[in-house]
Length: 259
Image 1: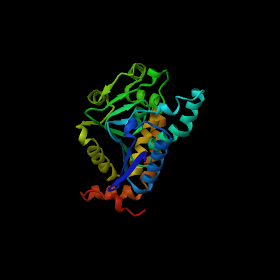
Image 2: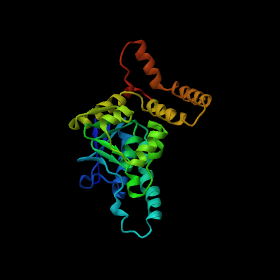
Image 3: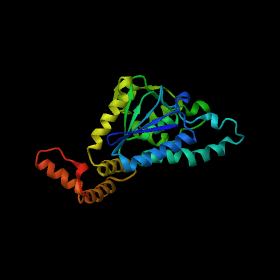
Image 4: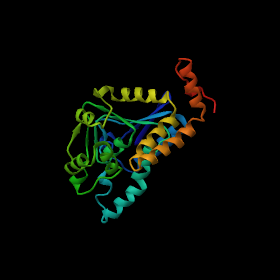
């Protein structure tokens, strides 16, 4: 079993489970992530993604490709059929996704972590791009997320040099929300996910999409997109419950809202 799935209340904890390979990605692991995210769609209001053992994810399992004669075309096919569906399952999830980065997040593992909505890192964890060390360029969304988080200059530096970014530096750079002791990283991530699960998934995912999309819009286009989404959300039962709870000075109970 390359991926483990567990429900903690209405938070799905998805664990990459190839610890002997530092949770390197191959077909079965990618499919396991996709299937787990699909299951979470119907069972959970938030997701935590983490790794088993000493690593979050060490990137692609290069042993899968090392014996092939035409690695270039194989890599393109691998990305199309394995990596990209897995990445989209995480980045396009209909609920918020928290990464519990318990160890090294290298190569595509870094891309996956950066594609989650929020990251909690263990003290011993670190990011490294790793791609140029084997003559490749970053994939799995890394070239999109790094400049989004850091700006172009810093993104190029980290991607070219493969510098290790330890947890405390990642926090200073804004790559994670919190750094915690190693044995607390999953617990803290689940706590954060539960606080998000108390809210409205549609509202949270819409917020994610508005912020991501705004980088390619003009200010006026962003205003208009905000207006359309506010109009839609303003018609929901969850919004009515939120306003009622505010007026009544109580905590809203979005789980009990009747559609």
